[in-house]
Image: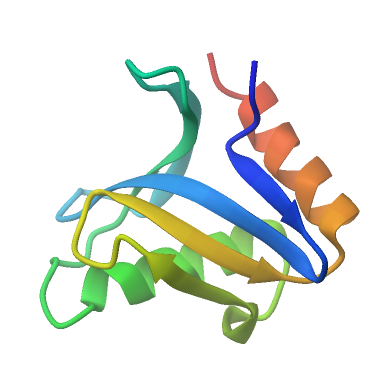
Length: 106
């Protein structure tokens, strides 16, 4: 089974499915889409207007992975539910952190 991220030289690219206008801000673990690709499920309270939901997602992922907010940015899918986040940092540490999130989900 593939991981929901790709290792890069200076970090990882993380696939995320974002649900805006939720009642809580939280990461809900890893799920597999119908096409077999895996992504992290995330919910944020922010609305999908003027980039508010994307910024909330960046802050949530940064806090959860213990990296500065400036290290996380949406690099693809800015207006779509499926997004790619680029997270700067030690790729091995980030990969282990994301894998741990996947373990805690069903």
